[in-house]
Amino acid sequence: MAENQLDIAKQLFENQENIILMYAFNSTGKTRLSVAYKDYSKNKNGGDHAGVYYNAFSEDLFVWENDDENTVLNINYSNLSQFHSFLDVKDIEEKLAIYNPKYKFDFNLDTDPERGIESITFYVDEENKTPIKISRGEERIFVWCFFLALFEVETWVGEQDAHLFIDDPVSSLDEHNIFVTAESIFDLIEASYLKKRIIISTHHIGLFSILFNWLKKGDRSAKYKELTKACILGNKNGNLELKSPSGDVFLYHLHLIQTLAEAQKEQLFKFHIVLLRQVLENIASFLGSARPGFVLSEIGVDDTAKVMDMLNSLSHKNAYQFQINVMSEDEETLFNVVFDKLLAKYNFKF
Image (cartoon, rainbow, N blue to C red):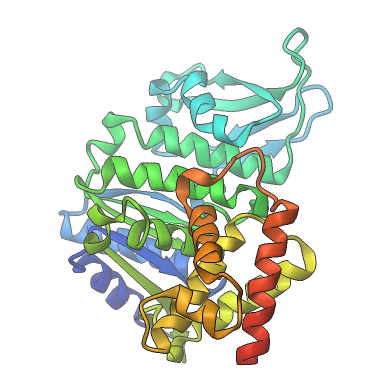
């Protein structure tokens, strides 16, 4: 446990921006920081909860009961159970729709309404509804969408309306779903940013970069960028510290490049174009230019204007096709040409 968790929680609490986007490596202390923030904000609110949270403890409420005849996902009783009665299956189906789930589900209600939903039964065949166990990734998507629906329950959120603190909603998701989850978070921000503070922390550089791009540089960023603080949470000698993601001292661009190099060897997804564009922006800024296209010309890419237009188009929020998230052959070719020339020119060590 970091010695200064409460100090960082206080720093976040007193921050002027309404949207805080925070990146941190795993095991830095993000989840513990969300708990420290909860404790600090409760103390400032007379001991009452001031906001709502999604973190590892939220996921831990859902536990499988592995019975051959009646496999269900149990929901442990908590202070949230009283709000389950405001949910129905359609609420969660609406949130799940963008993930294209291959299953259906039913609620199994507790006999005591105050205890809410006792468990969830998943099935594929709507006629006999034979219970199935969905995958770990599907489970985490379901839990995330369950909470997205809960976030809209005014009886809960209306009483604790100061902030939303979302910690690592993609902890167990595969790369296919990063863009989709970013979309769901962006929609949540869009609906809430004028009414409450929204804090998003993640270890996933792709999710961080996509949201950073949409909030600070995208077509609709004008209304968000002055209200958004992006930071990197570090842990140095047992103390947490918040840093800006810009500047060589934080090696942010090297982490992006390492992520892209690994993806190039294994599997490229569309969101990697967003990361590549961000690398170009960082290098352009370091070289004293505001134009990523300047870097393209420096590394020897032909027809830089056309290539930059393609990168911009592929980085656009609305250009993403949820069903087609692996790069096409042409997109891979574009990525490889730019990325290979970038590495050859600057010889980054990572």
